[in-house]
Amino acid sequence: MNTLPPPAHSVQFGETEISFSLSYVDRKTLAIHVYPDGHVSVDAPLTADIEKVYGKVKKRASWILKQQRQFESYPAPLPERCYVSGETHRYLGRQYRLKVIEGLGEAVKMTRGMLQIETYNPQDRLRVQRLLQAWYRSKALTVFAERYAQCIQRVERLGIHHNKGFQLRFMSKRWGSCTGKGIITLNPELIAAPKDCIDYVIIHELCHLKEHNHSQAFYRLLASVMNDWELRRKLLNEMVEVRFV
Image (cartoon, rainbow, N blue to C red; front, side, top):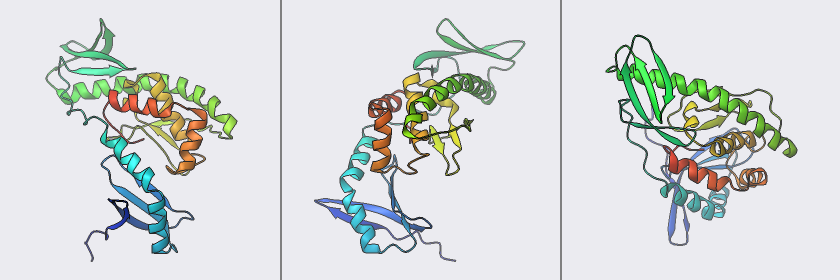
């Protein structure tokens, strides 16, 4: 069994070499992806000629470099959460101090600028984490449903229709996703961001119903319904832990 990594490819753009991984997949068009760590991957049709692949990557070189610079400008990811009193957590763009107290029951509530978690055993950090995540999920369901309804109205004039709603799933590297079957998934932790940023993520995923990759056509579509999307993305990634969307 061959366990060697796939061969690396590269093109020269001025004095810059752009390296990328290449996969041949069952699709009609070529797609280029740039990830937060700077890695570039290319999905090419099964019958694509390698020289034409290089040509298309070189044609998109300035866009690739722009995306890499954008990701480089983002702050480093936040340190891993400890879920102890004094830690800062966000809700709808505002900061709240975590206060973990011992109690006869279990509850999470916002009070006096704090997120207070009552539990039988305050030293059980995993339990504190689960209680907070359940609270985030509950709040996310309500707020995201409201924002989803607003966003649907904004994209309908573009011929984008969606009546499947959304599902929630905690994801370590994404704020949202949209499958080829039109299933939209949102990360409950997005509730930490302001509503303007939540709208950006939802509209981003709705636009994928029409443009399935991060092509220039996708960003033109996104800009046609949200002309300040770059500002909203910048605010989102500066405010909370960086994820790719």
